[in-house]
Image 1 (cartoon, helix red, strand yellow):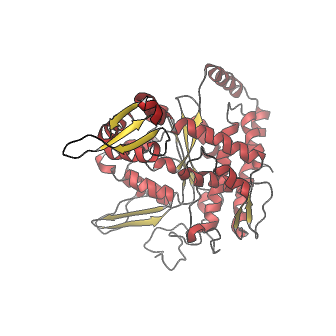
Image 2: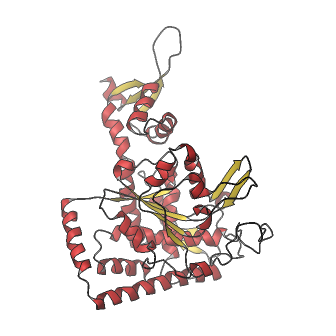
Image 3: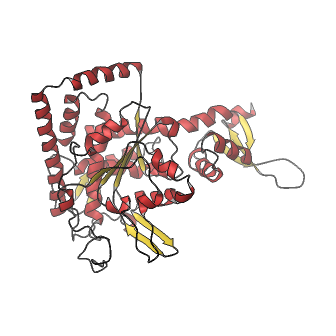
Length: 433
């Protein structure tokens, strides 16, 4: 089975609109999730048979289909990298963000939902709460030092967690009871580590969940660091697409029983294929990874930022994990074919459209001007980071400093006192002219 074609065909038969360039990223995310499992899940914090786990006292996951005893095989810089692809869908209300996530994760009907996940068959999946606290997501401890309740990040280890609106997470981070939400989210998305030192004890475990979330443009406030953890999918809305949505809704509502049964059977086929791929990969993992020169050539293009290179490398890994035929027991050779090149090109275009919008706002506002650095930080804080001064400074480092049209230099004013730094917007010859 060509899983990419099957998922796209399933979406077309269900009359989904404008999803072909987006569904492939979800399939790659599933592949990258499996790859991460193969490379890292030989060490599990929740294995009841592990000598590091007290099965009577500690939280355990007795039946995890991804747990294994194989050695890691992908260790660049002698480290165990994380290859999960977390997805952020950005689009206006009604653009279909939730529909895409639910297509895969909806209870009973999702393409990777499993009724038997609790007994070790298939992935654990969940649509996250509309309201959540930092303790509810990552855990807290009682007076005896035991983790209270059922923190989602721990329960969902190895699974897929969907949020129809990511603002439930970002809004919680602004409240007094959840100020640590951002830091815990950053580390858990990056390397899986959740670590909190509290008065009564520690919250300390490693989790390997993958997040797929949606957000509206006005709420797209990825704090410094989160943009490096998420793969961005941009959903543009036009009057023509609005018309197509209405037509699609009419067709979806008028499906006959025969068509519905056919699509239900297709859902089962896709679920079985994904589960079999996961089981085959765990039973017979690769013996190494080889990236060919065409991967390096694509990643070295100038419009790919250095900190984004690893995100696109993960897409390449996930794509090859989901190819038609599984070939374990040998190196996984990562190369760029026509379909993968289109996935990479489309994904980069969406990312640039989203991530460079704030950059373009600052560029056009201050073009051909010299401003004190302190004023620039204040303006960026006001226009972009919602009043967060430290986030504004980090945004300048990540986004303005690399630009050829932006420069910082020491003030040339005479006299005593601190001269300070002046920020120049525009090419030197244009400013001087």
